[in-house]
Length: 256
Image 1 (cartoon, rainbow, N blue to C red):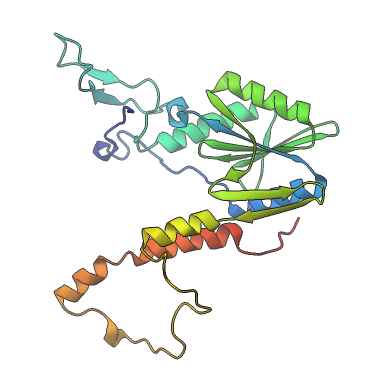
Image 2 (tube, one colour):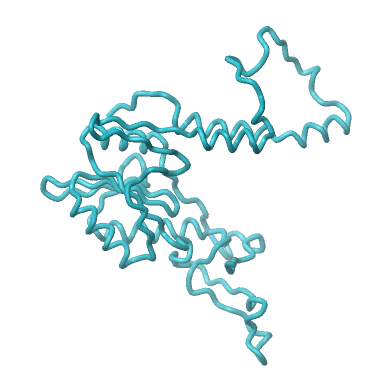
């Protein structure tokens, strides 16, 4: 059970200004994992517990006292938030800003092309950090340096050490360090997508539609019944799910 805000009641420019927070690019992950495989770098992972509770609030926000925790005799009073909580419009952005400030205070430098990738160099030691909401990927050539970074982050936030990364951002990593080979697969993700759209028993095809089929605007739904039937077909959601897999694990050769 988690206390959340009624974010839908927030008003732009009154309760919040910006809500956008950057997300790491799939290409960045592919390139860094390719570097790690080639140079036999360590690939570790940590999870930030209740990440969005770490953000600071720039606007003054009040909320009703939570049901079951109302102070007797002071029911008319409200709570003033000191920190961000889940479902606030700006929760994701506040957390991202806080993490950026903290990690740069440890001499990490943000990448110019991907704001969720950081790098730290100390002598011959190098460490890369990939930040994805509440998951953090550590890549580097110095075990002690990576261990120090993890220990330091644990003093800043409540962290869970996931050890060597084997499953990140919905992508499974399989690695053969003796041959310096690393692969990515989303087979379990694709199976879940097929089940969600009730297509787990469908047959494989080389093409997404029949060859020679002709489409025209005459096939558009015209009646209210046809429009209702089409609105119940989750086409956009299905295409978006497929696009995610294409972006993350489509066979390619990243440019290092």
